Image (cartoon, rainbow, N blue to C red; front, side, top):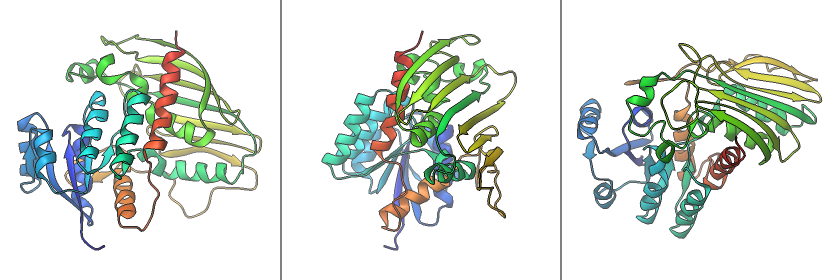
Length: 337
């Protein structure tokens, strides 16, 4: 198959702009339409990207377009319904994190994909970070032996305006909470590495923002493989993001992945397994043509989907994988004080 894969995007906020920029630079993709309820937003992007067809009605877009994949990049509470609607119309779907706000909705999304014989993918771009890949390989090869503990710190800044400028951020019904927004990628990695979360105790509070959801929390964790863990998250760090880090403590080694976006190896001491030579270990912030962004690797997510559609590779994150972090988040909120 040599033709370009056709994508359409619903949701043209900051992450939607990232998707559009990535697809615009990808040689094997074509964006056939964009949709957002704010007409000025789609018109501005259409002008920037050579007159892409625009819609303010999602139903109308699905009715009229010829596309292979719908990118659902809307506020969290809309993910499930919009994904199911597209799947039932015969489109494959890529949905941004979080997959949905309830695991029961994730299940309905998976059921819709299966019923219509379509693909459902979830954006988990941090899995492609170089430090994450190296740690995953070390764990898969049992280089660290028995894993005793993992420590995950998400110490970020979100100013009040971040919430005030949005009709959905910071609202439980629409956003769910910081675990869905700031922590979901980290939780995905922990479950990917250590198995399902089987036990947790959490304390959460709203300390520094006028919002309905928590802005700080601490959790004690136990995973399926016996690993004990801690999770600390906050959006109350002064001035700017401090770090997002994961430290793994094993029988035969210790690894810390840090930086602001899990994009830097800060410590690596693994028995008989030094870091490979000649590799750049720090992911740089990505710049996608007309979009300047943080370290994201969305381009690798898109490339993996195109590769799967064309039968070359199947290294993607499907709904069955995506629902696992939602189960974990539900457990964390359910066991919180």
